[in-house]
Amino acid sequence: MPVAVETHDLRKAFGSTQALNGVDLEVPRATVLGLLGPNGAGKTTAVRILTTLLQPDGGTALIDGINVVEDPRAVRQRIGLTGQYAAVDERLTGSENLQHIGRLFRLGSTEARLRADELLAQFDLTEAADRVVKGYSGGMRRRLDIAMSLISRPSVLFLDEPTTGLDPRSRLGMWDLIEGLVRDGTTTVLTTQYLDEAERLADQIAVIDQGVVIARGTAAELKAQIGGARLTVTGASPADLDAMATALGSLPMVIGATEMDPITRSVTVTVTSAEGVVPAVVRTLDSAGVEIADVDVAGPTLDDVFLQLTGRSTADPDDADGVAAAPAKRKGRK
Amino acid sequence: MTATTETMEPAAAAPLPTGVLWIWRDSWTEATRHLRAVPRNPELLVFATIQPVMFVLLFVYVFGGAIATPGYSNYEQYLIPGIVAQTVVFGSAFTGVGLADDLSKGMIDRLRSLPMYQPAVLIGRTLSDLARNVVAFVVMMIVAFLVGFRVEGSWLAALGATALLLGFSYAFSWIQALIGLSVSSVEAANSAGFIWMFPLTFVSSAFVPTASMPSWLAAIANANPFTKLTNAARALFNGQDPGSDVWQAVAWAVGITVVFAFLAARKFARSASR
Ligand SMILES: Nc1ncnc2c1ncn2[C@@H]1O[C@H](COP(=O)(O)OP(=O)(O)OP(=O)(O)O)[C@@H](O)[C@H]1O
Ligand SMILES: [Mg+2]
Image (cartoon, rainbow over all chains, first blue to last red; front, side, top):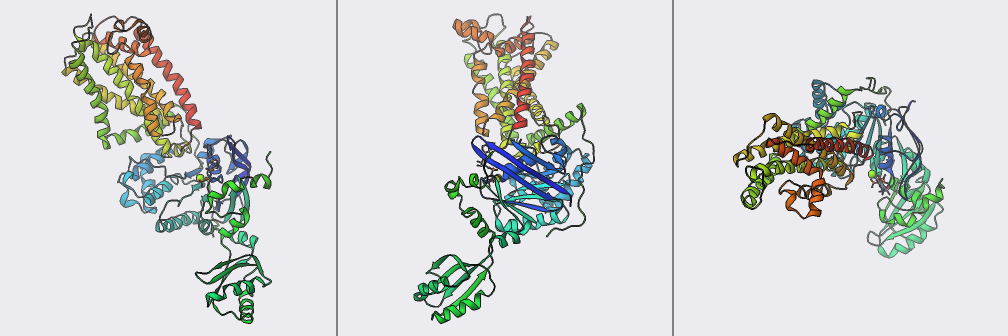
């Protein structure tokens, strides 16, 4: 399969901050790469280098085999960029914004208008086409923003956190939209902090943290990599909570810590595999004389993957300082 | 999830254009982006012209009697070229503010990711601001004629003065472009763009003859390029011999444009939205 995006040992520092510390990526044509990482991981930096906005300190980056540093114009001819913040001209109408980009891609004025109309329809903006963007909602702006990066039918589309700041309904709409684009064969690099988003949209996920890719694979592979499942048992009586925890702790398939929640009367543990867990739990707790209200086994989420890989949750940016030395251990600096 | 068999071929088959026509087309496209917005925010233009008009009226009627301008039929003949020069030079600040706005909104990132002629973003911006300055200039001149200003030299010389004034404002747009790309917010672009223009325009021959200043200040004022511009425009409007002032003013305008266009284009190529 031909490769649309390729980076090798990509590096970039801002002062003493090593934003990218040797990143290797490979995106086959007509697939979606999800760059998943918390705040400050280096996602935007990687996108900015790939879209010729930023010069790397070292390493190579190729789009359709073209080096982004050596021939930026040829690269710009092939890419579409939707940055982290909607880049639209608020003083113009939606249609004017699109036509403007079209003309900068050297479409004739009729051609630019036709393409604009086409995209406005595709992105459900026809009604708002002749309204000044200043009055658009966040979701509408974001849709227009993405439409603007598609004017030239790019070979590779970069979407930097396309759903950050959108309400849940707009977010689902955006997912449908992106899935449609991808179905049409647009190679896409998508950055996100949302695990469910990467899981739904990406063929391959690269988990990036502090400038280093710490894991990669499909969502299923990443889950298999940490293995296990989450087992939650709810007791019938609050008095049984300790007995329940002890009994569960003695099970051979249980790994990791035991979490007790007196309010829901439940105990949660991680088990090596979901298979055969429920009968074993029922038997063990039965012989321990604990009455059960509910047993629930769930596969790991990507959040679990992240937690396992970095020792902190994605939703926990305040922790970042505590593990600042971690990437240096994982990968020595040059 | 997305295993489409038919992969899309890159659309980049068309050869990349080069040459003057390409530069002009992209610059004009960018200029129209801003020009289109002007009639939608008429108050911006209105307020931009109210202040200089107020200046004309205040200076003429409040200070007019107190300031001696020997060699001129009246204070209007002396003052108007100076105030017009100040107005068009102040008008250059729009360039920096506009670029800072584009930068903060991510628009510069978008444009930098396009295969367009990159400096066209700056050329288009400075040209549209020049157009705005032409409007401000015309409004000022109408008010000037209403308060008694007259072209006392040839109309050709007056036309020369007009070209010089607008050329200077265009040159200053490039200084403002560099400022707008260097600061971190629109507000900062506004302050940083204006603050130095006050001493530049007041420590000059724009409002009072430099001979009336303390000698150390007069020395600074006489060396000020803005004094050259004012003197040249004033002489041309009043039918006097401008001497070397015209050429010195032209040299300043060309020099500033060349140097700051280079610096701004270089800054632009490295700029990043915030
Ligand atoms: N222009 C810059 N100057 C200085 N430091 C920068 C600059 N851009 C990024 N950084 C730093 O580089 C690191 C990576 O930033 P980057 O924007 O790539 O992260 P990100 O993964 O996109 O984060 P977010 O989810 O917050 O957008 C951060 O520590 C950031 O502070
Ligand atoms: Mg980012």
